[in-house]
Length: 232
Image (cartoon, rainbow, N blue to C red; front, side):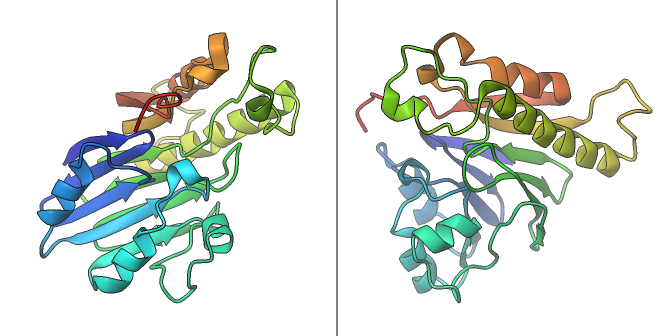
């Protein structure tokens, strides 16, 4: 499996017979276009964690309608807010629910923002965690009010929710490994974690990431969501 970074929060997991596209928004260097052009005969899955404009591209539903082997797996809020035809998705992602395809198993979890975060297990056991907008969002006092006002809970409430999500993920990973989190000091493992490292959070930018690394062992960490202020 190869993991390609596209832009902002978009990654593509490439296997011999499929592509898994996470949170496609923009493709400024044409990397996704190149992968899709070379995907003849492959299954292509577009996973969308939530409806925010920087995690979604409105061309995706039309692409999937035109290609029988291209599939869209949007979160429940994306279907509603982006008015996606309910007959189109291969599955609608809701927290606590699982999706099984010939190429991977997916479980959706709560997010501290809208939508879901997702944990995928590939056929060879490789695990992929895409956080979407799930993070311990703590904006500094000097933050742009339009950003800070998006958080509707206190810092303590945010942290409590975020840590509860990490516990759920850790528990499921440990169960899959056949180990109880309380019965072993070894942390369960995520092979590839795609996680927001957002400069708008200032000194708190890495807080949620460090808490993830305390909850699970991450073999390969891929930062994302840091494109604010950059030209696309």
